Length: 160
Image (cartoon, rainbow, N blue to C red; front, side, top):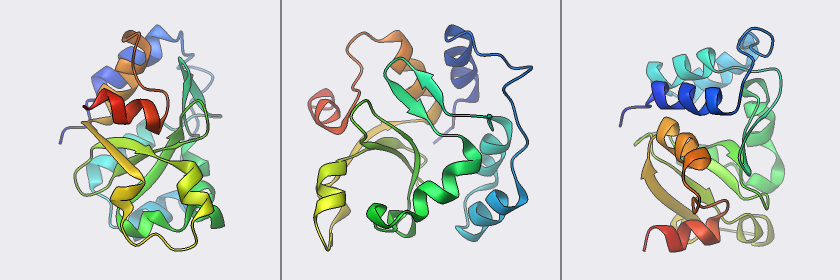
C-alpha cells in the first residue's frame, strides 16, 4: 500500500502546521529501532520526512513525535505488539493506539482497554481494527471527514 505522503502534507496544511520551526531530525537511535524491525525503506523515509518536535494533533487524534516511537512501542502495557507487525504511531481521543501494520502499511486502531488489561493476547485481531487505509489517507480523513473514527469503537462501526 502506498503511504500517500501528499495527503499527509495536505492534512498538516489544514492544521496550519509550521514546517519551518516544528520539524526535527530523526535520531540515530530511532532509525536503528525502525531498521531492526525490518521496516520498508519507504516507511522509514516517511518517518524521516515527518519527524516533528512534538506530537501533532489532527482534529481529535494524534500523530506521535517520531523520536518517541521507540519509547511508546517499548512501554510494558503495549505488550510488544510491534513484534507482531503493528507499530504504534499515534493515539485516538481516548488513548487507543493508532498503529500501522508494517507488512501491509494499513492503519488502524487498537482497543487500549483490552490491550492493557489482558495478560496474554494470543490473537491481535481481537484488539486490532484495520481501517485498510494508508497513513496519509488516515490522517487526511481525520481532518476532512466529520464522522471519522477517533477510537477503536468508532472504527469498528466505521468499517461495517
